[in-house]
Image (tube, rainbow, N blue to C red):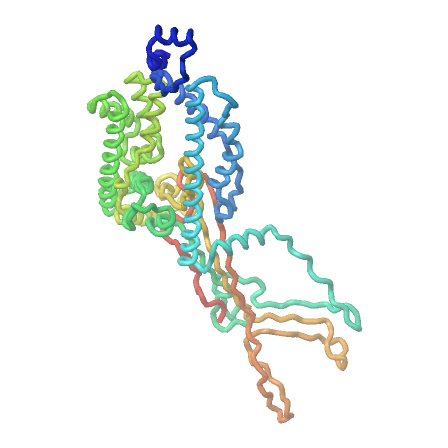
Length: 513
């Protein structure tokens, strides 16, 4: 008001001009001082909005997530968009400039959420293409074939056809196969005369797409642009280190100890990089000096005593949450200040803290080697039950991570998926179908059609020697299908941890003769 009156010449002159009706209309822009409490008031309102947005959920079927038929971030973005008017709560009129600022902040926040979900939706589409590539490179399958297999599982099987009826009545058929049941075991003619020496009636191949060693399939899917092919995620290295430590507690092994020590040095270096970044963030976003910031991070990290535990806490957000709590208590931060610091800490990104693929795989391979030796010894001395006890209680192979972390919408990943592609090939040494009727000239006879790989002959010129008409090739088949499993991300995902990404039965790929 004082500014407007001043533009008009002061209070006295303004009063005179009002009396003689000579006061002209003037316009002036007035910039008011921002109330000191406005920022915190708007921030607290955004905290409430954030909680409401966080409660926005969508329900997706696990199989559709694992086969990339659905895009959860995209569905979340659409759900938030439908709730936008309610969440923004834009009034018809504004009571004050502060109210307008509050609504503007809400709209800006919702725009940012939509942009982030859109980015995650795009990333998931890219991951779908990479998964398809990995499937085609490691197996004969594809996501399309995997989806068809899941659809077929839900498709009702039609009833068998009715028994055919001929002029003499119903025709009954009987099937005689050798072997009656196809098996992966090796069989010979001593059990089934139709066999030609030793054969494998059925052979199989099982390929686990996302398994250890690391750095190949899973990292090829979820890797970012800053990642190189010779690095793995810190969480992967930390879980591998924990597995090595647990195995060494049960069984001493020089090779494993050496591999573990090399990996531990890399994990410790990554931890130092991460903690340094954290105390720098505390120093930059609070009034704490560097020494106080370091002390805050040191106190916050104290519950995690091992390198592996500290690395896992740093990668899953537990460490950042505790640093914010400790800083809040030691620096008497307000609720807004503590929340702002927590978000800054959680946004810390240090791509350089990725241990090498060689150290991680070397340690994982050593863990598996020790585990296999110990299991073989236990199995030889005490049987399968003892071996299972060794596997579950003493060795650390269960800690080895496996599977594909599904890209998160906005929080730590929500599930881990893995795909197995199973291929079977089989061959019947002899497959015969007999009908209950023969030629009209032979009452009571049967007609048998056999496929046994032998030549088919007929004496067409009545010279006593059959002429070859062809060969009754054996019946063989090949079938493949995909199996997708989606589980919660903790504790270790899902997948093969024994180091055999591809398992083939004896005789593969030659079923039969």
